[in-house]
Length: 492
Image (cartoon, rainbow, N blue to C red; front, side, top):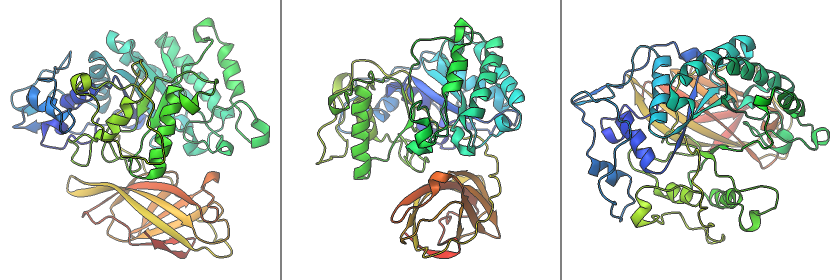
């Protein structure tokens, strides 16, 4: 389910209105992460009393750039929900999280969206615990999703998100993929699969990007060739001459020069224009922008912290790679992209429409992070700094939840090897809800995180990024002190 539905403003608090705004902005695809362990739980209620859907004019103004006139009243969704009088979100199923998840996927499909369902390994280790059981769970879920004819034609199955999280190598992951694909195909023939790579940190690619098939031995890469050979030896239904490419996640706050530069270069690559026309790839029209949600710590959202106002500099950027907002039919782009004096302008938008684009970020109930193994202190100087970026802090029931990104920099002349341990202390914490790139536990109000992955080795004058989601009784959740392997770090 999309975050932000606790708002009393129907522009951000009513689910169908959020979907309507996404469609008006030009998006035609959505990525829905989930955890099998959460699907049978009772869903959270987002029913808002004394709430009415916003007017067509209010919706139109909310998706029109400042200083521009909207083309008119916003068109409705092709298949809007049945609203109860003065109630928002009353149409959402409340029988189980699974039923609601399936309803949400169907709702998107009936309103013209491609739907990628995405099992998140970081929150759900079912695949590691029981491959056969995981495969059957996938088969049953896809069968139920495919019962809807609209959804069946628009469904994409992302079997396992970011397998690097638990150090999976292709030698194991390939067999997991094939087992799940066979189980799903037996119940839902013709399913479209999305797969993510792994085990190629030697190329400095992680989190689903490891697909290289050359220089395997010289760079110490996990080898995907056996998987692809096995896949292509399957019956004809699995065979294809070209594998389509979709960019699974990319995004930025568009605040730092390095981001502005890299995102412009990335647009050139997707468009296959200028210096990026390398003769080795075609334009890439399929992508998912990360993310809709304002509380994405490292990228921010397509909406700002109000969860209502659109970040128009991001929409402007996406129009250069194919996005076609409803409001631009008469007004053109808003030209709010931050300037970059050292770079040439972005290439013009390709003529193809993107398919499918971005994803609002659902908020599955997280599972506790595994306990880290403490590491011995490293020898030599361990001077360090920790820059803390606050993604967002919001009220959640009686308490508060906050997302934080940490950038740990090695200021010494010695390399800090993994595993290393970072301890953070500060306000009163209740629970660690989620962590990325490392393992974090809470004990006696001290957050202890261990960086174990090889690419988290911190070279002199370099930094690594980790993050976490934490809850507490007050809004004061930012740590106020940090130690790396027992030595105090400077906070920034």
